[in-house]
Amino acid sequence: MKKKREQAEVIELYKEASPELLRLLHRRLGNRQDAEEVAQDAFEKLCSLEERDDIRDLRNYFFTMANRMALNVLRRRNTENDYLVKQRPLLMDESDSMFDPAGIARRDEKLSLVKKAIQALPQKTGHIFLLHRFEGYTYPEIAKQLGLSKKSVEYHMSRALGAVMNVVKGA
Image 1 (tube, rainbow, N blue to C red):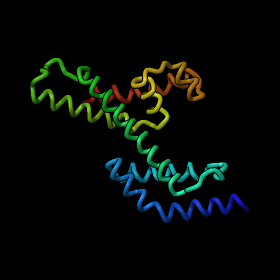
Image 2 (image 1 turned 120 degrees about the vertical axis):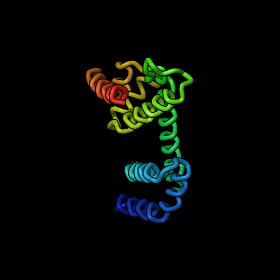
Image 3 (image 1 turned 90 degrees about the vertical axis):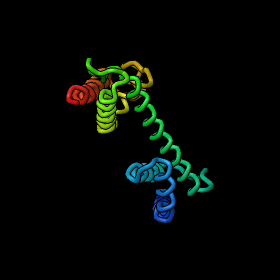
């Protein structure tokens, strides 16, 4: 009975607070789709909490949780952008000059395509790619952290690298 009452309380909170939360997340993240995804993820996480007796202000807790999740999205974006900047020289054609406007435009277009390829990866594959390429974790460290086999990590990295290389070669 208590569990149903708590679930009803969370659902009512979501209905009441979601318009304000979505506006806040939209401003922070810059697009509505990411804002809706973070709000939904925060709602699901709040629903899945086993014990909420220690939470004094459920609304504040919900907003704080969603805000932290949004910060993680922003960190991931920044990490992807840092990676793309480091990959710029790899995206240059032999004919490109560092100061040639046409070469710079081609490089920037390739960077944009690579970023989209990374964002289009399945969540687990993208996470593993970011852990390895941006955070510097080894395959065994990633496997241990995520509770996967080393072979599974290798599989996801292979998929991610294949997607990125296809974009680079095709552009």
